[in-house]
Picture 1: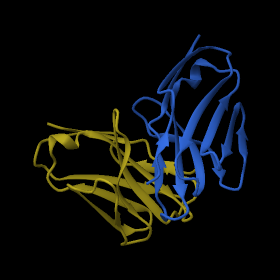
Picture 2: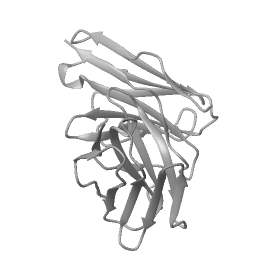
Picture 3: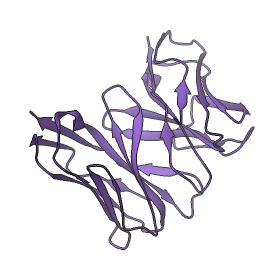
Picture 4: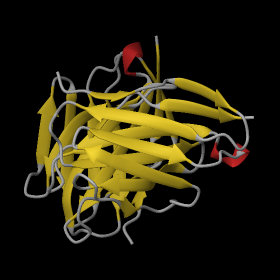
Length: 112
Length: 113
């Protein structure tokens, strides 16, 4: 069964903390994505990567950075967490084309 | 820029009813269209993928159709069950924007026993 795994389902962090969200896929997909999902705003693309060490900004990259050192792993970094980054974060992967998109279970981040 | 709309935002039906969810998009130059299901607090689960050259796809009680020229897709759910209660989202990928997907805001479905 294909799988996208997000390391943490629930996190609570303090304002100003550095936060790492990890995502691993076992499908050998080239493309990986980070979205955030907020009520009334839908899914918004933060960053995506189409190859190792490659990244592209999405619609809302401010306050975030990403790292892709290995094909199967895509990390989202909040350098200094703020309360407006409280959200559900969703990682996804696909083949180029793009092919079918597969999501992880999501990481619910609360910043106090 | 591609805009994807799903109407209605919420739908409530009695168990056993057949139903149709709608998805419309403004730019017909799509590569594929995908339907997802999302349960509360969870990620998105892929239901059906329709390539731009296809007209429909079926999986069990689900049938998705695509009319690219009119910018519309429908998801038909036959004999609905309470376990079908979830939010259903559609997403399109574009021919000319590489690997990005554009999502609708979803239809929240409640199937009443």
